[in-house]
Each structure stands twice: as structure tokens, then as C-alpha cells.
Image 1 (cartoon, helix red, strand yellow):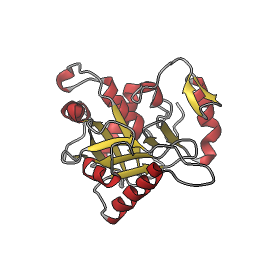
Image 2 (cartoon, one colour):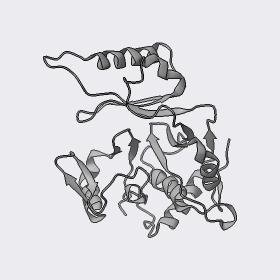
Image 3 (cartoon, helix red, strand yellow):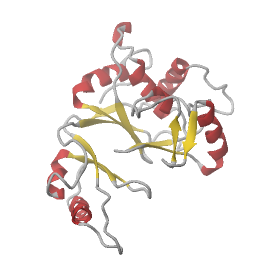
Image 4 (cartoon, helix red, strand yellow):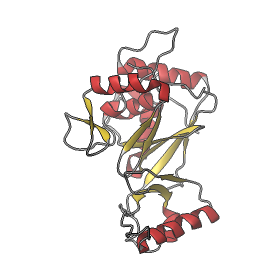
Length: 252
């Protein structure tokens, strides 16, 4: 277990793990030890044992759990979860469930014309994003990379800014509900948050030891918070899982 602080971003196409530059070598070693290999055609690390992408697979979250110089690293996922949630409770961090925010995960289309000209879809995407800036929503996440079209997490109420249904890829009828952890009381280099939270949701031990089905999730790291996003149909089950156990988190 590497004990490296990470930022995690789920997008329409990929999962991105951002790590400190100084930690590049140990991160590569950890990924390779867990069965990941760099695929040039995809320009990404892929799990060579898997033949399809699963946004909530535990292997994606188990590669970077926490440790501190004075504390031996955890040896099991359950120990990692216990340490992470004990730390969150000591710092009085609670779950903020935004039941009134319904998010859509979608993406732009990459069909730019030659000679640097933008297509009609690109122009409408730019207009939509401008409208979102002029009329700020409560939640908007935009991820831009060189290798993929723009990926967005935005409120359902912001969809009309983008015109017709053909401007954005993705289902407009499946909604995610954000659950926010205010991480301001923790140092920026704190480790284990993503892994601990994800482990809780895919580990599936509910209140009273009741076994529950895993909850598929997306995660977004920012400078001040971590946001878990789950399907609105799974919201109550996700809250119960995060609240369960000796170190379960309180819900605001």
C-alpha cells in the first residue's frame, strides 16, 4: 500500500487519478503490482485482467490507501476503512446529502472541422458553458483533456442551456445525487479518503451487519471537498452504508 495523497475525478469516459509529481515512480510501481499496464493506444493505465470498464471497481480505489511516517500502513481494506472513518469522525466531518440537486453526467462531441474551425456542436457547447457561467448553477464540473472530448457533470436544470439533445452525449434521464464531505479540516496531503469511502460503498455491510448490494458511485475531488455521486435510486442505501458501523459518519 503506497500511502500517497490523490485527487480522483470520474468523467464520462475515464477515471483520472492525480498524484504529486514527486510520487510518480511509486505510483507506477503500485499500479503495475496491482495488474495495471500502460496502454499506448488508450494513453492510459488499464487493468489487463478486465475486459470492460467498471466505474466502481474496487481495484481502481485500492491502489493508493493511506499511511503516515509514524504509523504502519494498513494491511487490509477493512483496516483502511476503519482508520479513514475514525479520522473523519475525529475532525467532525459529516455527510451533506444534496437531495434537491439532480446531476447528469455527459460529454461533448469531438467533431471539430479542419483548419481550426469549430462545428455547430462545438459552438453550441461553448454557448451552453457560457450561459452556465453567466447564470451559475449550484453544481458544475467540467473536465478538459487533450485526448478526450469535454466531460461534464451538471444539474438537470442546466441542460436547456445546451440546446438540442444531440449536443451532449449521455442519458438525460438518469440522475446522480451528490453527497459532499467538507475536507477543509484535513491537510491537503491527507490520504485514504477516496479508498475508504469507496470501500464502504462497495463493501456492502449495512447497519446491524446486514449484507447489502454494492452501490455504484462516481467521485470528484476538489481542493476543499470530496463529492460522492450515486444514482438517485441508490441514495438511501448509500447513506446507510456510509453511516453504518462504529465509525459511520453523521448525516447533515
